[in-house]
Image (cartoon, rainbow, N blue to C red; front, side):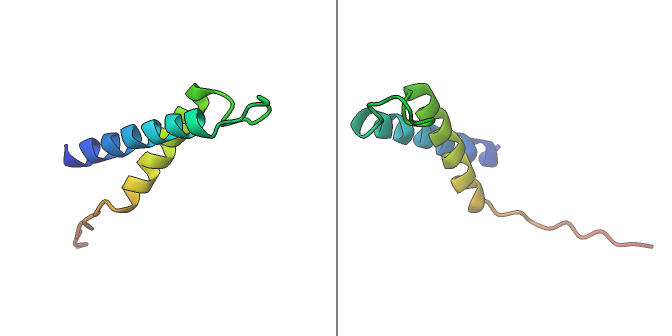
Length: 67
């Protein structure tokens, strides 16, 4: 449960950062694939935020004994 909340929080922060990037910097010509639309920019930010947070998640290895 904690991993899902952490991943969701990272995605939410990334989406907010993506929207802020579009709002303050953006692309006026409309030829930029990511930053020309607030939806594209927010989705890209959410994916990048989720990936960034997933780097720091601890995965505990399972010990399986073979017989």
